Every structure is written in C-alpha cells, then in structure tokens.
Amino acid sequence: MCKQPKQDETLKATDWMASLRHEARMLVRELDAKPGARRLFEGRIRQDDYVHYLVQTYQYVRWSTGFLQDSGERMKKEGQHTALADLLIQKAGEESGHERWLLADLKNLGWSAERVESEPACSAVRAYVEWNRFTTLSGVPTAFLGTAYVLEYLSVERAPGAVDRLIADSGIPNIHKAVTFLRGHGNADGDHVAELEAVLSQLTSPEEQAALLLSARTTRALFPSFFREP
Image (tube, rainbow, N blue to C red; front, side, top):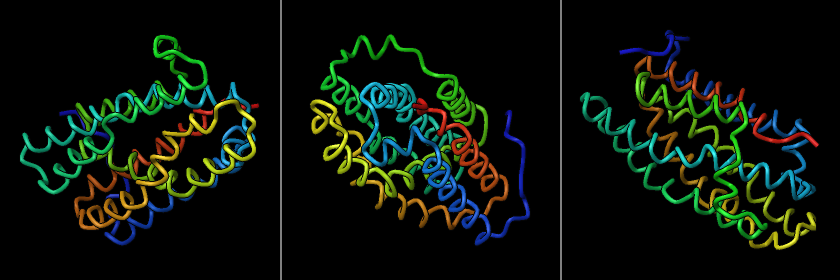
C-alpha cells in the first residue's frame, strides 16, 4: 500500500491537536489577507467572482461524500479504528447533497446545471481533488478528516457573517436565494468542529496524526487559489 510521507512523528497528542488548530486559524488569516476571499467575507464581491467561487466549490464538493464514504469503508475493511471509520461514514451522510445547494444557488444566479458541469475546475481545485483521491484510495484513509477540519473551522468563522453582508451589501440580484451553501455550512459546522476535535484528540498513531496534518496543510496551501482575484 502506498502511503504519504511520515512527518512530525514525535508529536505528542496535545501538540498535534494544537498544530491542527493552527492550520485552521492560518487558513482563515491567509484568506482574510487575500482580496478575492476578503471581498466575499465582506459582502463586496462582484457577481462574476461570486459565481466563480460557487462553481469551483461545486467542482470539489461533488467528490466529498464519496471520499468520506470510501475512506470509512476502507478502514472498516482493513480493520482499522472503528470510531474514526464510523465518523467518516457519518460525515459522508452530512455532506450528501451539498453539491445540490451549490447548483440551486447558481441556478438563482442564472446558471443551469449543464453550464456548471461544463465549467473546468481550476488547477488548485484539481490538485485538491486528486490529493484527497490519493489519500482515500492509497494513502492513510483518515487523512481526509484533516481536510474536513480546516474547512469546517473556516465555515464557522466566516460563513455566517459573509451571508449577512452579501445580502445587505453586495447588490447581486437574487442574492438572498443564492447563499444556501454558505448558510448551511455556517449553521451546521460549529457542532461538526467540536465533534471532530473530541474524536481526533483520542488519535494516538503518529502516522495518522502526520497524515491529517499534511492534508490540513495541503488544503491550506490550495484553498486560497479557489478564489478569483479582482
């Protein structure tokens, strides 16, 4: 079985969770400093840039349920941590249908599902998808939880405020019907972050800790490029 490189294998349990939280906080900080993302958070994004963000988000979210489900099932098949395998499968259920939120938002902005499907994923989204495909099929299967953690942390920190400001300040026609994805994640992900922390804090395998951190760092490196710069 092909595995990711091992990193920071001497991390203590408390240290590794602090490192994971650091990756999540740094992702938020780096997005705040990036004009394209900051304009979304501040509700000042132009319609074409918001559409770009939603389309690129669709191009990776469409794979999330499968990655989570396949990772959990692979762990069960290999007799690995039952609790983490169950968490992955549970999260697959939580993510199911979120791509339809994005299609609904885009429809309300004048984009058909066929048009969305025909749009190419940007290079950063393609790298994100292939990285998570690798960890799901050949790497450490729990690694996707590192990706999930930083993105859910981001949603908690920025999605609710972004929804309010977009509706109040963006001036995008029909915007109140085009924030389903952001609103849904902002409302739900607070509980998801706490649940993830409770389970992950019990993870003692240095290899798995390193794999989760590597996926979190990979997501942090790629995600800012999902936005189009103004």
